[in-house]
Image (tube, rainbow, N blue to C red; front, side, top):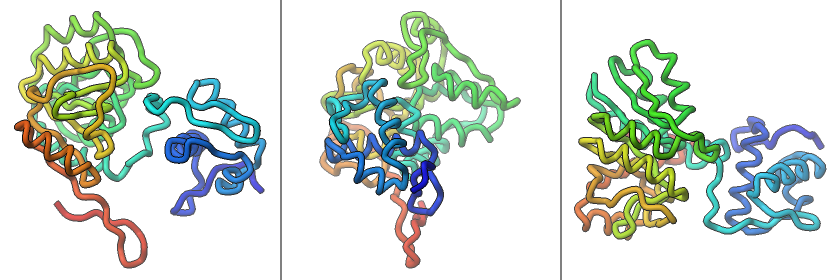
Length: 281
């Protein structure tokens, strides 16, 4: 048995971070895992898997037990590096729609998150944009683009989301004029509004929304209908929610009943050969 990476569905080995993300996703579903079974499934040795579990326990993302691990509380925020490949196809499809809402030459606000990071990648080919973002990873990716001006409002770095948050950044944001804000959230609900795990992050992202003429929420289907601790804004500030077809139909209906435009990106469809293909539109 190799100590390398797990082999994915396409036969390509996963990196360690991707393997640990798969571990966390498995724990989220099953609540408990055993070292021997999972090591065999991932194609790694038991000692390799124990090292993965130890690292995740040090980050307080799980609790180790004799022979395995159990999940921590359900409402735990995973760091961005472990969420990048979750619902990957959905996020790409959502981002493709979102970039069509951005006029050439406009000022765009981007919060942190895996879906907004995908939006940033697709915006990078556009010309004459000014991007205001408190996300360090997005700022780093766009700053090398000569035709994109990047404005970073500042604040205290939040390792879970790579965002700069706090009163400093919020004060800077309140002095800016933003045409389009593209916002990532941990939950969006007709009654609960736009929510996230961290109250300081909510303050900063709320300031960005306040200064935007139009607000587009990008959220994969798992986020619709969820409500978390910190409220960013009410749904009345939202121009459009861009999600995907996996969203709970009742959550979508409640948002539309509240006057929110909801656009659902189609999910990839399996081809005759068993591979996934994207539907048009």
